[in-house]
Image (cartoon, rainbow, N blue to C red):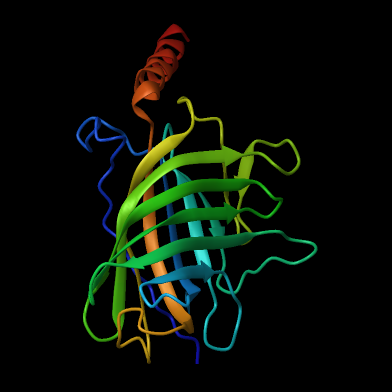
Length: 234
């Protein structure tokens, strides 16, 4: 039976502390579920590393969606069970450190990479805090930074889903972008402790929102005004 664990994270846009959700338009989102979450405890009981990767197993079939919201909404979808192979590099990977402060709190930082069907990527750094949500659940709450869209495959400048859909990566804002990861969550049998020992294959889900960095807000606005001007001149 497939373990369909979906975590929907409520995201508040944030860019360098200078922009709030009231004046920073969310330009893109990424949501994922049923990644395989694993933790490796180091020789120091207070330090370890967490990874969440796309898999296709009897118990977990990962999927994700990446969307562009401006100037129109477009989504690239990756079906349950997609995994990279020699003919399709699509993938999703999260890697985070775990530095325990107490029995229910730890700090963490790391990276994420979402890869489309022809090798294009969305990458970024993550930093924040791990908290123990009770028996069976651990949460990561943090910020995104240095988010970059890279056209690594054929020069099509689009992020393409394996199940369907795509969107252009030519945002009217200058990368890198920023955002907030309000929640990454995982659970499952055996996750009753807070990083007390190594584990693997915990169903992991979450969501991200991406906003322009402070310096590119004006450019995004000018791009919108230019589009309006072109419409009026027709």
